[in-house]
Image (cartoon, rainbow, N blue to C red; front, side):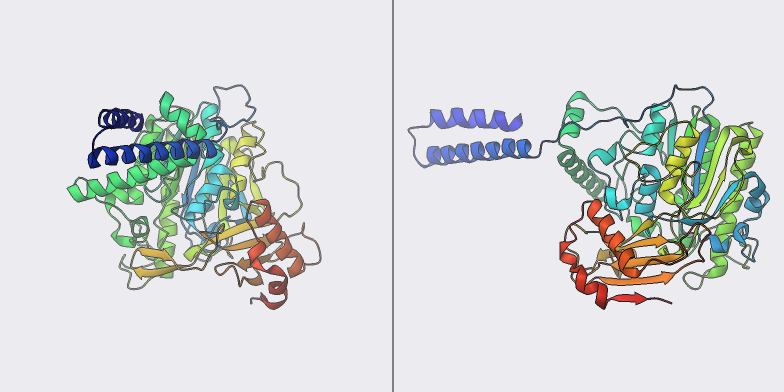
Length: 512
């Protein structure tokens, strides 16, 4: 509109000065240039036009009930199940979870879908592969229809009040561009209503609107920082501060937020809680259990890692007790999990412990499961058929046959200054932040490293014993790699540049 007004006045000015000299010619040239730019702008809008996105999930919903349970996803960052006593660890790191194991369904063979928290949180909340959403590692965000197709959006349609307690600028749902997802996120109420104008453009030109929003946010952050109004934060620094994390960004603050929401949020509510005390390289917790002090002389110290896991267990006890005191325990579905292994490893199993209301499902499960199975499992429990756009399986109704689990790792990062990273891999579009794609199947992890997509490195390793539902004979590596390449192709990646035929012969390496 402003451009049209300017062109109108430029046209009037050019007409009034049509008989002048240099100035009038300059004005006419400028007028013509502006006309060309305006034409190009309209052409760009026409080319980038997108059929209006659906803002609802498209899921056939059951009648809204008064007895829907509250739901709490209670995750701790980077926890290996092997370091939890509920999974057989020799140290008693999870005494409370041990005590409620008989009330819960414990999954013994649970895997991530992403080595990085960004992709792992994305797969948890969307029920989709990171390769489908292209959300692998920051600054990746949801885009297009993925902005609206997610688990919390379905819950909102069922009448849930949604709460996100995690970390701003890193895995915050709003920062990840999840639309119509949460009502509250990290100390702020979110407005999910759009004006007529903004909604019109968002649904038809989602990429352009996102580009404008991102750049406006960055401009505002820089101006606020320069003016002293607010400090800019590096998300990589925020998650790597260990015992020096500021109180208002600590797990203590997150637990206090959760307690407040349990007491005051409308019912039913869904809370997605992600603790970071166990993230590393140094660990944050309240009280040392396996050490004399909290002082950490080195990175990734095992005793302090176990302290952080013990702290997570203590927080679970606090929340469990609060729910019990309020009479809400058997009206709440509790899910305890982690996003990826310690130090972002993908060859270690993760915890998944689900306490259903009234202990409806209990025991242990040895079948392999994955993080993006959690959302469809909860939907099934609520009586909602998981949508076709979810890639995950309901663990309540899945077949007993093993299925491949695809796991992404981010492009290799090179540390320049502590807390400041840059991508150093030689990647060609469309891989971008994707560095390695792996497949866990029947005890073997097959991986294709595409950090240099012209020279992919293929490897495989046994990561656990076979389960009873697996075929007697292992997959041949070539067949497994073929499944990985097919997955990439199905997810929209151009794999032609990988030059796969020669790599299958040259780079297949068994790791011990």
